[in-house]
Structures are given as structure tokens and as C-alpha cells.
Length: 201
Image 1 (cartoon, rainbow, N blue to C red):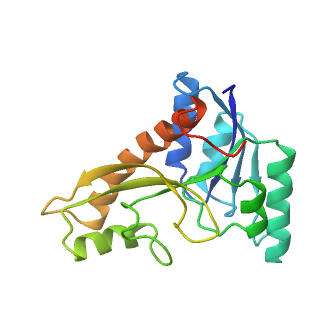
Image 2: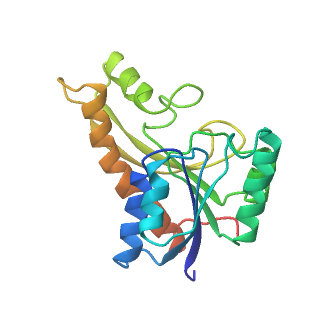
């Protein structure tokens, strides 16, 4: 496959975005980030993108009061940028069915657990790691998957496991899982770019 054109959607710090940027700049990935989009105006991930001269956009309640207007603006931007792959990298908002249909099997997400465990409504951020520790799990990890109209219900692409230590807290476990997320996100995009994982182009 020729160079992948990406849109990366974020809501916060954008460390997974940074992992993608670093992989592109080191030529590990043959891809281009066309736009980074956040639903939070002050997300640090927007600053990360701007430092690398990547186009950014804020589409949130601050500039689109109506949720359907936000969905339409997001869809229009993705279509206008002619992206091949939409990457959800810590994006804490639900995409509209229209966007999911338009980009069927071209939207991927990363989740900080071994799906189907600890996923779906309410399982995001440290809530995931707190539940893993509370239930005395021996392992956790991260999962990349295609996005469908459910929450974390799309086809699994890749997973990587992390051992849960006896003295782990939600914060220490989260830090180790995040390291895995960075590798897994880059590895998944690379597998798509190399044609090892088929997308809906």
C-alpha cells in the first residue's frame, strides 16, 4: 500500500499521537498525519501536533453547541482531508453512525485492556486499571480494534499482554500499559500500511 493518510483523534495528552509522529519521523511508518482533531480545546495533543507542523482542528461543544453539528463537521473534515485511516488515540467521544458507515473498517481504536475484559461503557482511563486490580487479575494489556457502532465491540486487530504485579496501583499499571499501547498502536498502523491487516479501502 502507498503512504497511508491518517487522521488522529484525541481528547488529552496525545502520547499515542506522539508515538505515531515519532515512528513517521524515524521512517518506521510510511504514513502522513493529515490532521489531528480534538473534542477538547486545550488538549495537549494539539500542541504536540503543532510542534510538528501538523494541521489541527478543535470540534467540540465550544464551537458546535449541537451534537449533530459536531458530527457533521467532523465527517466533512475527514472527507475533505481524504484520509485512508481514522485513528482514535484516547478520543473520549462517540462517533456518529454516519461517520462509522462512511469509514467502515477504516477506523481503529486502542483500548487499555485485553478486550473483551474491562471494556464498553464506563471503562476508560484509570477506571480500567482500577477494575483490573480490584478483581486481582494476573495480567492486563492493550488492544487495537476496528470501530463499529458499539463501544469497544469491533473486530480485534492485535493485543499485547502486561503482567499485573502484586504491588501495582492503578497509576503504576497504567504507566506500563501505556508503554505497550505506544508499540501496539504503531505496530497496528504498520501492519495496515504493509497490507498484513486489510482495511476497507
